[in-house]
Structures are given as C-alpha cells and as structure tokens.
Length: 439
Image (cartoon, rainbow, N blue to C red; front, side, top):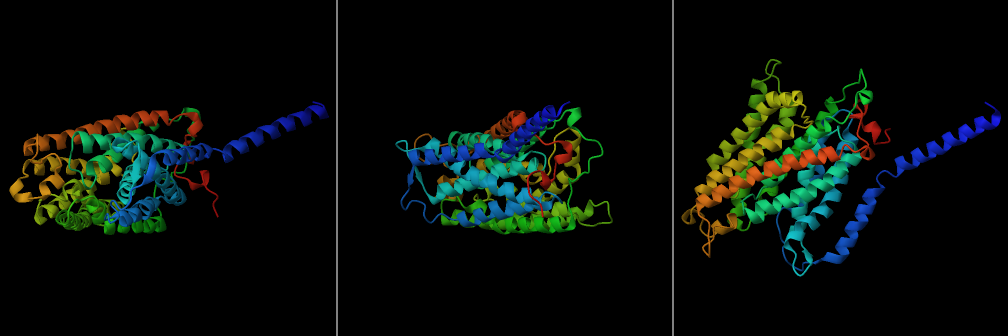
C-alpha cells in the first residue's frame, strides 16, 4: 500500500471514530426531545388549580421516599451505586412529569388539567411503580433501555390505575395493587423478555460476577431502607379522605411495619445456613414488606391486632421468598436483582386478597361516614354496591392488574431488546464503568 492509500485509510478510520464518538455523546438526546414535547403539552393543557388540595398530606414525605429511599436501597451492588442513584433520579424526574399528564388525561375538565399538590403526589406515587420495575432489572438493562421502559410503563400503569380506581372502583389507598404488584410483575415480565437478549458471540467467558454487595454498599443500602421504613406510614395514608381514615392508615401501617421487622430478623436467623447469622438482604427488604401488605387495607377497620398479624405474615412471606423463590425464578430465566417479587409483588398480592376479605365485611354501622370515603361505590345513592359486589371488584382489580402488568412488561421487554437501545453484554452488567466517569 502506498503512502496516499495509508493516509486515506487513516482518514476513514478517523471519520468512523468521530461518528462513533458523536453517537455515544448524543445517545440520550431523544430524552431531551421527549422533555421538550412534555413542555409543549404542559403549555397546552396544564393550568394552576388554585387552592384545591393545597394542604394534602404526605407529598413531602413521599418525595423523600422516591429520591432517597428507593435510590439508596438499590446501592447494594458493589460496582453499581452511581447507576442506582443516578438513574433513579433520572427516571423519577422524567416519570413524574409524564405520569401527571397520563393520569390527568382520564379526568380532564374542558380539555384542561388543573395541576394541584395532589396531582404531584399521585405522579410521585406512580413513579414508584417504575422504580420498583427498575429494581427487577437493576444492572441488567442499559440506561437507554431503562428510560424506554419507563416511558412505556408509565402509560400502561396509568391505564391500569384508571381501571382499578375508576372502572372497578377498588379501594387501594396505599397502592399495593396498582403500584406495588403492578411494578413488580411488570418488572418480572421485562426481565423474562430481556433474558434472551444476548447471542453466543456477545456472551463472554470468565466474566467477573458483579451481582453482589460489598460491606460499604450494604451500609448505604440500609440508608434507603430506613428512610422508606420511617416514611411508609405517610405514603400509605397520603390519599385518605378524612382525619379518622388518615389516623387508621398511619396506625395500621406502623404496626404492620414493626411486626414485619421483628419477624424478618427472627426468620432470617432461623433460615440461615451460617449458624443463625442474619442476612442483610432480608433486613434491607423484608422489614418493609409489612408496609406493602397493609397498604390497600390500611384505612379500613381491620383492627390493630390484624395489622400486626398482617406484618407477621408479610415478613414470613418475604423472607421465604428471598430464601427459596428467588433462586427458583433465576433457574427459570426470570432475573430479579433486588427481589421485587418478595418485597412488592407477593405482599402486594397478599394485600389485594385482604381487600376482598375486608370489603366483604364492611358495614355502614362500623364505618359510619367513612364508608363512602374508603369504598367509593358503596354509597347510599342510586345503584350502591353491596359488600359482596365490592369484594368481587377488589379481587377482579387484582387479577386484571397481574395480567396487564406481566403481559405489558413482557411486550415492553421484547421491544427494549432493540439494538439502538444498547443492550448490555455479560461483561457490562452491574458495572458503573459503562455509564459513568469513575474517579
């Protein structure tokens, strides 16, 4: 090859490198385009809601749970803390804006959304759905895949929320059905679909397994657990309709959390293969399961003793899930990095079943004026539902949520395998170096 030919080859290589560098730097640009689209939609449809809902409870506490609680809880991976915190922030900031629109489009007045503090709270709560799904594919999905999944899931999740709240008129004040169960099984559906994302040529041999904690990363994850534990009563009680309902929700949630925590420590030691030592995975997660399990019934007249019993049941269910069910799901090809099935999925289903039980027992004599606040459709005007009808609708809302979430998650997962979303290779999983400049 002559000198001119060599120079020409070098120039072509230089052009290729520039193109690759440019693409790498611009890969998140479509998200800016989406952000601008959101801005336009807000200009067109959104106006201030005046004084409506200005004193709504729980917004600030829920905000802390979303950005600190969920974020730090997912820092347990030894080489993925930047991504856990960073993508948690990125996803939540995007989803809150998108969810506010998606949820409100079902309840517009004169083609206008009147934004209030309550709408912001509901958008915050919907973002929890996406962050639960994030936990199922933590370290396995690329940044672009996560953002793509978040946009699709928010639209599907808001549709399901409309089904639960407006079609079935189910009582789900703490979101155990429409938020926790939905997010968990949407995430497992995505995980199942992503499992086949790699070809043999993309699968590296002798890959260092980074899917595990370090001593320090487990300590930072405990920060998230403790923040979530402290603020969970606010999360469950935020959308209650009366002071008495609010107080029941706080009391029941706190008692359930406390009972789940005690049960978790006892069960973790009892099931240990290391002479009764405690497992930090259980302590970080199963201690919170009581908050999920009592979520949908926390504002009902369940009794303080029942709240404690629910916490005990949730702690048992969650620890057993981590110990036995998560390994089984892994063998079946369904990854679950954070064990969201054990913290959010099964306790959410447990709570959904409990709603049907307690709805069937609800009476006007016991609830008084709170009956309509807890069960919207069981009013005294027109075609009021009976307790049995309400129980059936509670159960149907759970079944529909499980179907919509898993099917929707599986379809979304297959779409997320598109090459332009940069699926990760085996040697890129659970590794911050792929997305971040490291010190």
